[in-house]
Amino acid sequence: MSALLYVLILLVPAAFASGWWTARRAGVRRSGVQVSELSSDYFRGLNYLLNEEQDKAIEVFLKLAEYNRDTVETHLALGNLFRRRGEVDRAIRLHQHLVSRPGLSDAMKTVALLELGEDYMRAGLLDRAETLFSDLVAMDAHAPSALRHLIAIYQHERDWHKAIEHARRLEAMTGEDESGMIAQFYCELAEQSRQHGARQEAREYLRQAFACQADCVRAFMLTGRLYAEEGQHVEAARVYEQAVEADIAFVPEILPPLLNSYARSQQMEHAEHFLRDILERYHGISPVLALTRLYQQRDGDRTAIDFLTSQLRQRPSVRGLMALIDATMDKIEGEARENFLILRDLTKKLLEGQAMYRCSRCGFGAKAHHWQCPSCKSWSTIRPIHGVANE
Image: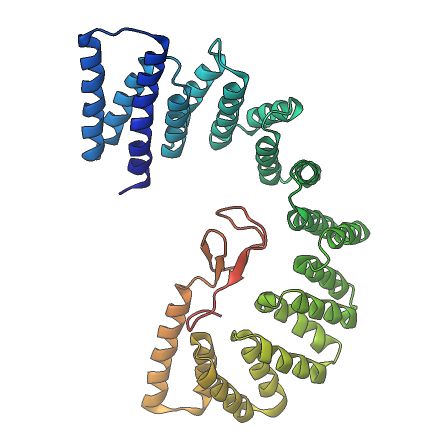
């Protein structure tokens, strides 16, 4: 059963019962013809639902809602349904009609305004949505919901200062911990400053990010990058190591710049010890491949191949297999080499079709890492996928 059909099935009895009960309480007498027409419309709409003719069903239920102007909840549900279907203009008109209805209680008007604001956001009318939600916050009406919508708008517009301001207001209002999200906003500001050459400003934003979240992995990585760009690779390596200790799940993102700083500061012996330690605590393939490259450069192909082969027996990996094929290709000739080339191409195509990261909140899959999930907009929820064809 589709989600839309499920919503409609839940909606119909509520709409029908709401209209009937309101009419009963008001003492309104309906003729037998009117009751018969209402029942006929109800069952006709239900029949459309069962036959998955959802457009016709919606029209019938709109007509049912018009039998009694007090069925506000039904109109709200239908407006939400229109928005979910992508019929945003229709949802806007319906919610505007509700807001302008005389005699509507303040509580229901506020709910209708929230729905109208969401319509504006879906339609891309962010300025209208911002004004509406700001007014609701000023009136202290459903302020937490309005604040969350405003934060979403400011994130979309990359207005991080306003996002921080409203996130702190939300935190104070609800008592919920928003420090992780606020730390990410400061990291966004730090990254902007770094790109514009304002390095001291970037460091100040990172200091505030750490004040919000002492173990902010992204803040550690940005700090390490600032050190590396200034040629201070010993300090950069130290900070990247702190990033790993803050959250070992980010090893695939941290290792490349960390190994670069190790190499530039001539700390390869320390690099080997650090990678060996990570190998015991992290079960992905990234530290194995890093150690394989280190052994290949220092001790030669044979040592590197033996190490990689032994590790692949413990943690099978398509990426590891591809590295093993690359390492042994030069030592194979004739038909065996052709077979290895075919195997390498197949392995490469297999990897090209695989998501390497997944959001722990909504399940969104991605080939590259994102600090904010492109789907659900959550922060720091994109993690490496562990498996034979992934990390």
